[in-house]
Length: 614
Image (tube, rainbow, N blue to C red; front, side, top):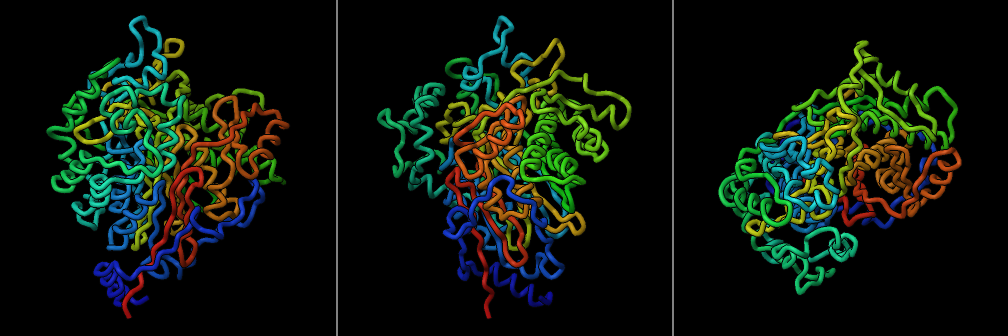
């Protein structure tokens, strides 16, 4: 397309959002490919786009959004259809998700955002992870007698709440990349909150879950009880639930920017919620008011002919994901393999990567984290030789010893603390070829259950992602709590580029606690290595190999066969009927985007095609 024609087309796109055709993809498509077994075959890796198929030519005017709720996707598409940047669409979508999917994320939590700039062909990340209070210390979750607080008590306590980062992330990313007016990005969320939104089956099921309800205090505290349990009954599917306070806050943020959240009434209300009730916390209004996001360059690891880019620590994505892919590559290359061998390689690569992740990854601004060393080819060449037998315990390697002859493994005690699956993920590509992979969270389901009535949102329990037991054999662990520190995260928003051209290839990510790493790696191998479609890769059974037990999802096609194969090989296998993934994937396929939404949740993936005037 000549430059002049491209400019005229772009002017039309920006002037008119009316002429667009919608193509619903992923789980809303009726002709989705049949789910194969995992892994069924090795196919030719996905063909790279040819020079004639790059952004700015055949993909101009196409955009796609994939997220966990159709209303969030619709909000994103509206922004994209009006010429907005992928960042703008992500903000609009997440503001809606915080209202309609409060069990997973919201403005009372945090996020990591990875942004691909199609013009410069670079990848930037925004760390909107929650921070510990100024007065926090390693004993944050220790009882007076020095014992470790049990998880449920810690989860529902005020001590679990970190200063929220989502709205600050919105503002920073929009300042750098936004094309749409900031004031327009919150209209859908405000309207849904003002007029009421329809309660989905998943929200109802979590509210009605007796085991979850017994553990959390959501129905015990007046504000949240009145909102989620009117007349002491959980919201029902199809109920219309309004939220005037959230609507007012969306309007205030639209008008006044992030200061509407970080100054004045809201920080004081957050402090009151944290310090009220049982086991009060130490977060103050000043901790909220002084919150700052961190902007970092993405860390990219190599796999085959691709760059796999994600957020640096405290996110685990930029280390654990490339480690799994790199170790898998080394395990299967140069040998004759069948599908069982490839399955075991995927499991063993996870075991090694998770062991290193657990030992080393934490907030890089507070401790030394060898995240670049862990994905160095020389280290992976050595680490693959540590492949443990199925009945052995995988332990951490030592990149210091391998790369410089200076061991670093004894710097920290080994930490196996969990992070919980109260999270959401969205993937977006705009009409300019820019992309966003964003994973957001409040930690466990409904966060800390602490309701900020003045803003109509729940607060996170993110600080339980720290090691609640801060020392092992007297040695401090890397992920121990500390003043203003950010807890380690498994969130792995990922963008894949062609290694030669830096063109966009794939956008992926998932919720799911520490299983996020395995879920996301599954889609990457599925698309890039096993020749699958985006939806086929998402539909594969989830297989998570952290620690001594391999969790295998047997409730989907190929799951039971995978479990049986691993058991026969000597692995300790835990069969699970369902896994809490919520994968949302976009793949560049020549002249169009191919999307996938996880059928385990309620989302969709939709491509829009902007039709220029004659």
